[in-house]
Length: 473
Image (cartoon, rainbow, N blue to C red; front, side, top):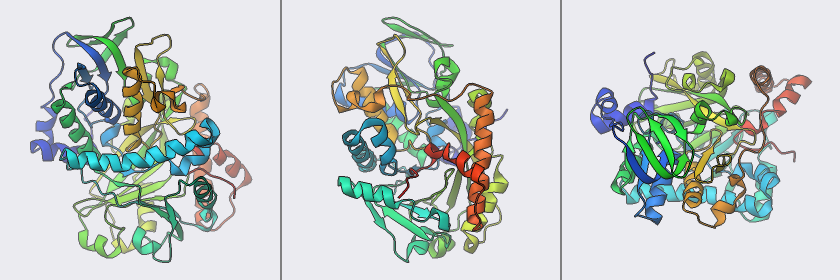
């Protein structure tokens, strides 16, 4: 099957190589046996940030990264490019890790927004990054007030960055559907594949060896460990597995730790004048209060991208079918677009694609050592909120692999998965029941109707999927 890459990845390769085929042909796979200090499997955000942070702390370390495709061809280059934080997940963080740890994680999740911006400026990565903030909004009466208890708690803890929006919300967020909202400047948007390709360049400049089109075929435990590929073997003192959802293809113990769910996106043709008149603020990310959210942002060349999460759930967590495909949910996206943006008068889209995310039970990533293997580390489960948080993941994994005793190695995220989903076929059947209940509930609320009691109860099971916690005021 021919791969249908995301708009972002296609644009990034065209910008870097002139056309996508030249970019795809540029990959240099591993074709020899190598020895190194640290091998990183996975050349997306997590693997690249980890490699960069290792070299910045200990430049003498010999670091090798392998990537089964090209850097940026997976989830790192197929997401919506919305740089969001964990401030709206504070209640969950507090419940799992305690108040002080939750406060620290919220502050760190906001700090990395500014760090990524500074990193791109320092290393001249033109990733179309706009730290223009985010609007978190209500689009119907039942959603109103949802953010208030979270903001009140953030204020109480002295870590609040959110401001209640005034009557100008609809203009600033680009849609009359927004009837209530909060704004935080600690957020923004980025062209995600350009960021991934930029991180790759910087990693190479720091001395990291990167081999693309190089898939791990097996991992032999031991000290040193042996990473096997078709073209050669990597003997490494330590191994970091930065595979995200692809962990499931190699390590069955994680099969019930995440669910692989699609997030589907469309982008318009360039409409800069219409966006200037009716669209959102340049570079801002806008997210609604649904469980399976709508999220949107503009692009540097005057397009509007709209995405929606929680569509396809992969049976048996098969990963490959969730990436580099056209969306199967174009009618749903079209309907949402027309409701949100009638003034833009767009009846068709220039491009569409589907990406996958690795959703954990808690909606937060988890890190650790493979069972019984003190020299093999992993991190996954960003749950659709990893554009910025993967830099935090890089801090955790680089600290772990370098043997540091610091806040990152001691944080609650390093305790592995905190919960499991049911086995198949119960997981998939349950996911479909919950997904459809969420859809019915939110459609009823959009229409001003009272959802069915059962739909409301089932929808509560998907609470961790939302960008913000659902808290009773």
